[in-house]
Length: 225
Length: 199
Image 1: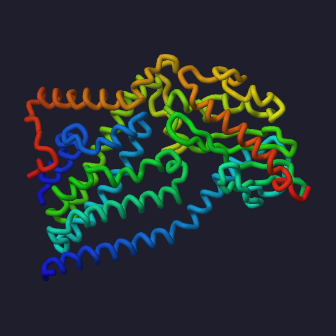
Image 2: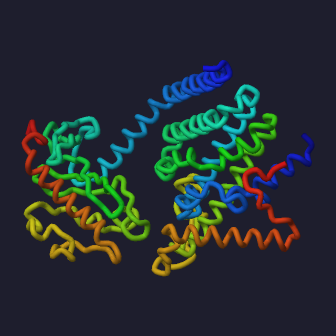
Image 3: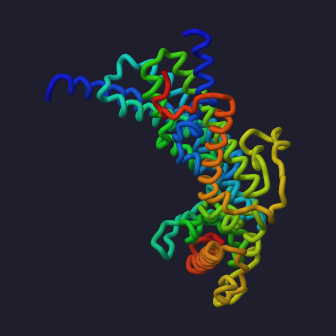
């Protein structure tokens, strides 16, 4: 594959065909985990790890997985990777696990990894599949962090609260208090805030794309050539 | 059974077997570390709720299992000083706004609360989660109380005629916690002899 093709994959994953803002996939963790920027960021990274690993595996075995049983095999691979991340985090990144642990199993039910396996990794060589899984996952991370940041600022008045739990004590400087706690709008942390912010951000992304003269991609999960 | 479907079944079976083996291997690699982390967590919460009494043993490993009023086996952790039980700690369960609230209760040998900490809950962020120690000092107000202080009819939130403040916008969560703590103290009163055996 040419450099151009890789640029395309990276741009698609991070922005043009962003899993949340363009394809509207993986809404369950998007709503559940964006009560703060830190939670969204952690969930995004865990998802990115699972996506990169499962894309790599599916591409490796793509010639051995028959068409008829591909979906159960994909689910098996995603579930195995999620369990791997779950156990490894519990054992070796325990502080982070205490924050995210409850939500890691949710990645299995996230349709974004499955959609990318079906639409891309099952037909692509190993390296592009890995890059696609990773970039789609990072795009997911960007989206969750952005939604989480808006909800957290309006809802609790903070930004990246508890980031030091996630990234280590040296990231304490990221934990900001922008508004007094009494000004927090609780609704933004509850489910309605998730829907509102996500919806407005989808609109915002399309407006930006329109201004840049891009065609709006509405092709969903199968929109890659 | 036609031949192609056998082949698909074989492929699916092979993947299941392969990834099953991978999972078993990961489980083997992580099992000790995960058990160690769980023990550390328990020691952590125990040392918080037993902080008010002196002890020289490891309460996380000095346990006795006792059935509570709901026929649930509760593991009671005991702190000892020179062999004498100075305090006990165990998990108590309250019903909150969104499911069960799991708390750790520490009680000294005379039945006074040493401390309460929330271990796990699903209460509303910003409202019910003020029962967490890092989000407010509400949970600390139980320290020093017992079944005699306040009297049983005052072991309620203010809205129900008791003495405990509820939070603005959340009554169900504090009500669940207060009820759970009172139940925990009654559990201690009913099984004091077994919990402090050896004294």
